Length: 329
Image 1 (cartoon, rainbow, N blue to C red):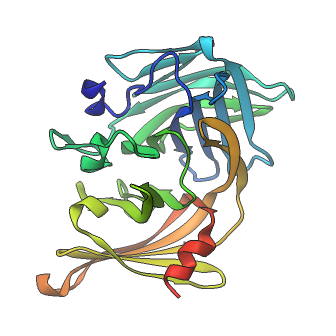
Image 2 (cartoon, rainbow, N blue to C red):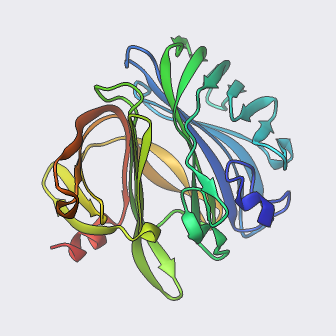
């Protein structure tokens, strides 16, 4: 189990679990930014002992998500590398291969390949995006970033639509644990004016020893450098401003100031884990537009490093956000 900590993309659970979920998130946007699709394979182990594997589907042009359910015995995984299979549907670091149908008649098939991945750094004392929190076994939810940005080629057939993703961009992450947080804000885009620029933000309420705190991870990949901000790096939430149509998040570190403007918009409903069971719901948009500013801190001379708007953004503002808002009024 300890060896897997340094391989966050690899399945972290076992064949028999209780009150546990694990899911991988593939986001793809075509070359013309006309279609954004998320494919989410995973497993769900309930407290009762019931379990199933699933493939969840969301898209910027889909009226409703797809949820393909399978016996948990159809889930196969490798301990050595990120290589999973659910009833013949295959998922790995450099590919996904789909041929699945739902009870409602929905269907998805095709193969995508991923090249030039940009993984979040892993080191002996910081095994990925969670940093040293990855070593804490009782965390409600662990988060891993598999690739901030990569090339996509191939196509998917979703219902009657064939979507060619060749020349498009992709992003990969995952979550595992018991439940999603009581509230969280998540955003991701790799469609800015400058190529190979990618951003992600995860801000969530984290239960901790009978209390809780608001933890966050943010990363901006720009000109080949990953600017990292996280609770464990010493960065802090300086302010969160709630408007009628937007939320502005201000993060400060000793070296940099990061400002993120997020729209408040509706999205498509997705299933989420609660005590391992996929009994919760959140709404995710795949066509939001966010705005970023990255500046040097005044002690570093100030000055703008990057400013731009990210399109085809995945965005979730989920849970009891009112509780977060009350902290910043």
